[in-house]
Structure formats: C-alpha cells, structure tokens
Image (cartoon, rainbow, N blue to C red):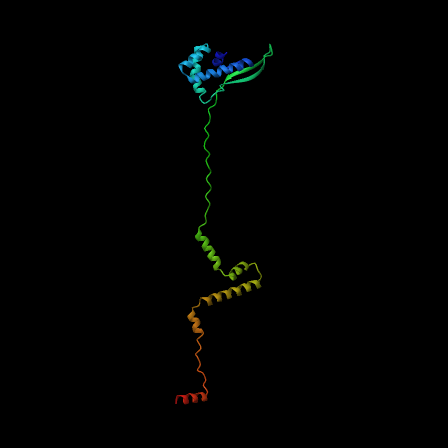
Length: 200
C-alpha cells in the first residue's frame, strides 16, 4: 500500500488501514529528505519498486523542504456498499510555499502649509494703525442712516486733528505760546527812601 501511495499519490482504503499507512508514509518521506545511501537502502526494504524509490528521493527534498511532518492527509469518504466499512482517501500533501510578509510602510504626514511671519506682522500692524473712528466709519458707510454717517465724519475729523496736533514740532508750539516776561515788582516810594537811607 505504501508503494501504491507514492506511485499514484493517493489511494482509497478503510479508516484503520489509512491511519497505519499514514505513519509509514511520513517515515519514508523523512528518509527521502535525509537523502544518504543508508536512508535509500532503508526505503528499498519497505517499498518494492526501485523506480518509486528514485522518484520519492528525487521529489521529496524539494517538495517538503519547508515542512516538518504532516506529509499525508486522510479524508473520510463514506461507507463501503458490501460490508458498510468506513472508507477514507489517503493523499500526499503538496504544501504551498510560504509568502514573505512585506514590511508595512508608514504613511508620511502631509506637509502643513505655513503662513509667512512677515505678512502676519504687517497685517497686524495695519489693523493697529487704523483709528477706531475710521474703522467705525468704514463699517457703517452705506448701511446706516444719514445721522450716523454725519457722526462718523465728525469723529474722523477730530481724530485727524488730534493726530496733526500730536505730530507738530515742539518749537512751533513754543512760538505760538511765548513765555511771559517777569514783571518788575512795584516798589512803594517809602521803600525806595528806606533803601537810600540804608546806603548812606
């Protein structure tokens, strides 16, 4: 039965014989993987045909190189019609080569768009430089009634005049307001006479 199994690669037999056959077949595949002369002679003592032994020793090292054990498979088929014995199918397994796992690649984070610092500072400076009156005037123009427009215009004019006064040079202000000269103290005639007497 072992010779037939390696010759045809599958045979059908009863469950009890299939389990025993599996044990012998796995042992012979192990000998074939070893591949030396002594292993070949041990296999020739069990397998009756030289061609089957040559085939086994040629194919087994390549076919079962990555597997240690489990070279055969037993599949239950059903019951035999004559005596109702349970029948199984014994097959040589051809293992699939193991696929190498590819290392996972980490996804790169998308670059964050950075706003230039200079533009941010300039925009902030412009906003700070605008007086509140102008901002209020620009926001209310076209939407508010005429009274509000007039108030906004007056506020804008006062803000401009304040800015102009702040920017005028100090010398100009000094010219506009001349320093008052110190007036001589009024001296009474009695005081003058008293001073003359003291001098004498």
